[in-house]
Length: 124
Image 1 (spheres, rainbow, N blue to C red):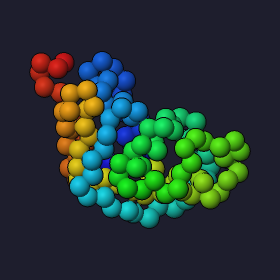
Image 2 (image 1 turned 45 degrees about the horizontal axis):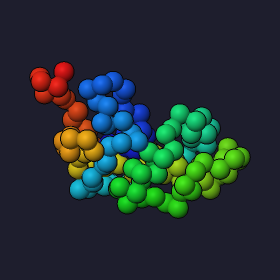
Image 3 (image 1 turned 45 degrees about the vertical axis):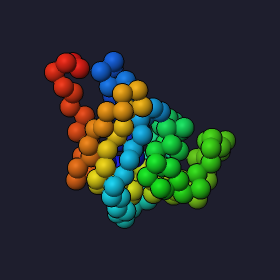
Image 4 (image 1 turned 90 degrees about the vertical axis):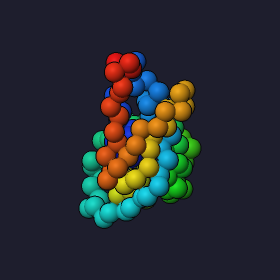
């Protein structure tokens, strides 16, 4: 699971505890893969991110990469920041672990990089 995915979890009452600003990623295994840097793509994605959730997720998986606590003005021209964001969003992947709901402590497993967020029948 890439952090760009965890920052885009669906809205809705059944998965409300897994919204990015609330769920915690517990990584048992993290891998890094090289992906070509695309400054334009990262620049376009930034405004769609929940910044605090991204920082929290990066901390949870041990890859904060010196990201600032808040998004600085003029980030579009800051190639160093954009490369750090590219790395944490696209190159860092949780291959094994879980997402934890802070309300219920329910764990949603991540296996082979894929989070299983299927609900039980009584949760639908």
